[in-house]
Amino acid sequence: MRVSTFPLIILCLFMGFTFWVMAGAEQSLLAFGAQLMSSPDTAQVVIDLYILAALACVWMYQDGKSRGKGWGYLLPFFIVTAIFVSAGPLLYLVLRGDQREADASPSKV
Image (cartoon, rainbow, N blue to C red; front, side):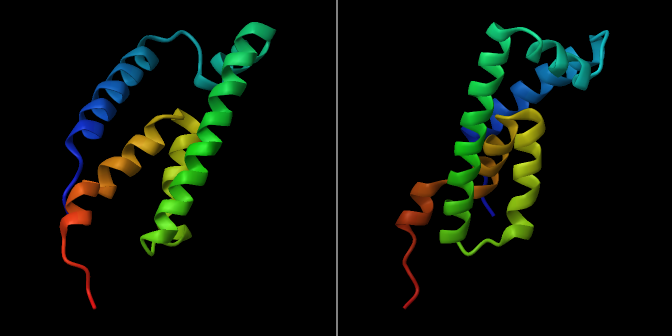
């Protein structure tokens, strides 16, 4: 299985930064989320982010379905997306591989 390099680099940088921030945080991830939702201006950003996350899950489902992947394969990506939003789709892209290679490979008859 080949992985996509660019999404892998972005995923590593993002998750490294995320874990660094979480290690130094003075509150839990749930408390931070509750604090964000307590103000209308930050709640708007969080809601917008989760709408985008839902759209990414729809895309992952449709793409996975077209590639013959079932719910068991897709569920971990959905869970990671629910917690870290962009990490789920990035991980999916990493493991999905390079689309150009898939397009260039001969199809089975």
